Image (cartoon, rainbow, N blue to C red):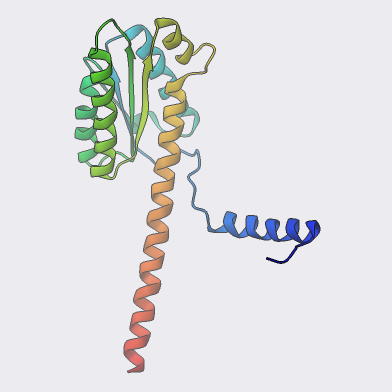
Length: 196
């Protein structure tokens, strides 16, 4: 490979960066016009209520209307995937926000529940095609959970809601690009037929 001057290298990097930026699809944080489902566990309610309030606040701050937000309360985190999937399958929601709090205890129960909740939420998102934001805290101690529900580490409910907004926008952007591509392909196909 030939040597490239540092100046030429910077120039080509800038060109590549600009091309990548133009080709990149990304969601934004505008929730206007989207519908959201929030599934929140009642178990460890002291924590999950903080997550829920922050998620709701994030949606409103991002432009969502109150009428476009549905809140479903479930007994514990284990029930979150089932409720999330039920909401997603209605096709009424652009994204689902899953909120819960699991604290490690003295038995293996914690590990089993964490794995099942994580797998269930991921599987629901993949199989329904509706984005699911993961706002289920998996903490060693109550102090860690408190920190992640609004103290030292921000609020993971707020962050999950922003992820849901961004993913709803991204899904829409991908759909628009896919539709435009299909129209272009149909137009090209029609031109080829006429030429024959």
